[in-house]
Length: 375
Image (cartoon, rainbow, N blue to C red; front, side, top):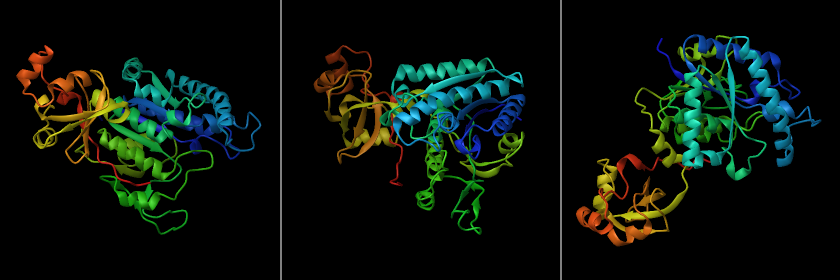
């Protein structure tokens, strides 16, 4: 079997006991399964929930705290317990573990985003198993990923993973809730994520110790697919469960097909993480060149702009109907663009003393990913 780069996400409900504390038995099984993947030659990154769930009983909470301060204090205690347990369990297999705690703003900063990529690449090169969690002790609502399902999808795209495995306590995606309707049929394979699927899963919450649910996993899977990474949602038991999933015999739903293509790291940052500093309106000819032919945006096709931005900032590209068709990293500031919009390339280069005319080069331009109102 060819070596793959695999991201595995393990939810809180698969790591904790009935009282909310960390289950040593469950964690040891996960560690054994991760080690077996490594022994097959695969590169593995783990996204692990469980810090809050592992810590709240240590602080005397009867259940998962609801206040921000309670959650952050609990995460501060639980994260240490979680990483210590993983480190010792993997050490028994001769595997070194590394911890990365991330917040949403790290992904919004292009330099830090690249640093995360470089760090993960170096760790994998050194055969280390990175363990990633959101930094719950310092994150605030506007700087969170929402849940670790989405974090796992974004990390899988960043590292150009071959496969994303989201382990949960339900064996896949169903048309109806199997806990309510025992006759509900499971989807063994889903080529794509449709709006209809979200309607079926919208009202199904996650477990009492986690924050995600099936809707969360479908949103994450859709994001992973848009980044070129197929996904799996399901469960399993024993030390070979991840091997079975990778081999195509897992207990769950396989999502995606063979037509996926990885999105390059700079375009991922532009599409999903970059702050937007303004808008550029293009004419019909430029819209056709960008959308249909994959061309760069030139000064001649630029009609107007909104906002104040510098070279290197990210802007949205809108058509004459004010519909967003893409976004990209500009080569001209708004001040320079005001002088050259509508000009031919040669005239624009002379006006700004530039060697290249592109307002946005196609390598730094991404068409708007199709979004559906599913929530």
